[in-house]
Length: 204
Image 1 (cartoon, rainbow, N blue to C red):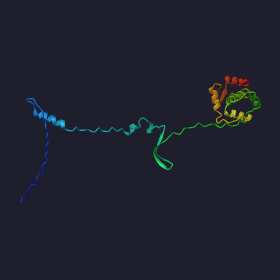
Image 2 (cartoon, one colour):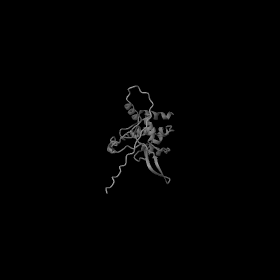
Image 3 (tube, rainbow, N blue to C red):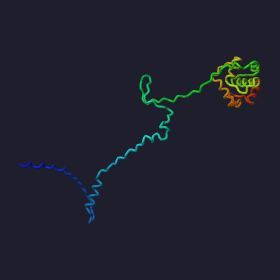
């Protein structure tokens, strides 16, 4: 007995019902109008745009050796503060402080006569004392250029209060006021304006 052939499952029927109420002139093509209506009722097809990705070499092309420049504020993604872990904690860049030179006493300078010269002047500021030191060393010891060590040595010899935290700063200030100049061999040299100022101190 022959086996019955399996029945083929029919595809589901699709029915589209469109109601159109329109007045058409005589001789119009119904088929073209129906096709246009079907196209208008179809949902729009959205084509996704491909994301543009840059190759790894393009990211570091502007930085030599592929190293990125550091930002003014560095960010630690995980930083422990008081036992708690914080994310994205901003760490300010450390400020570099200028190193202050500690002056020293020079033992190779003969200061005989300096105390008498200083007593003849009215010295109420560190700037005036620095000028007196520079003028005396230039006129009596032929030292064109002085350093903070020369000034500190003279301070200690006449027991002036050496309370300055930076013995170079007054020299910079006097240079800024054009009473002193930078010496080619180093240090600071008093000029003619500074010497005239020292001569005027006895009349103050």
